[in-house]
Image (cartoon, rainbow, N blue to C red; front, side, top):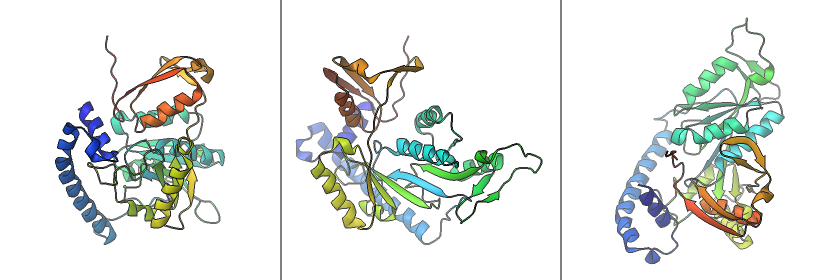
Length: 318
């Protein structure tokens, strides 16, 4: 299964199918059929929401959606963390809603990184029900107007909760295709290293939706911008502006601060520990290339790699 996932990814990002192996090319007809079926289902689902057959849920607090048009490696979860920290620094307690893919590895990471801040993390497929549970527990602050209007489900007898405990905003982690939720700000993340692949829909290509879905976005952020040539960044800008000329475009990068030991995550090691060393990068993320290139910039003599598919579940063998 792992080899099949990697093969599908190679097909999705291949610039020239003729250069693929015979085995890879044999998968293309089946993937093409599945991609066409996916596109039909996607179009029907969009129409049902557009014409009101499916209702949209609105939360009583501002909603920021962070999503993307392709599969992993676009920097969604780091951006969610960044936004949550900024909101917390301004005194707004955010609620992060995440589906908890692959055992909730990203949710656990967010919990570790945001431990000292008044940030709540709701994990589950039904975001509306999850959000309501948190609103019932903590209350909320409606800050969309010129003043903060406090609304709370809390019993009047419970008066010990400080205002920062009340939820002031919601952040949707991977929310762009979650059409059942109304949002106040739509952020689309784009992997600068591999922006659109072969421009085909899943599973033949990496696109969850056609590129025209960029029209729904309020902000576009090109991730891994420091690893991309300037001309390629301009090409990405042109594609975005042809679809939505007025869309603001920003750039982001991953900047490692330190290493830590797997068995003791509280131990911090200086980045200089790998200078002039041989490094093996073992990853199960959406953009392993960015991880490897980032490691190469730190200064080891040689970097080798061992890539697993995104969210691969590792097991300890005794």
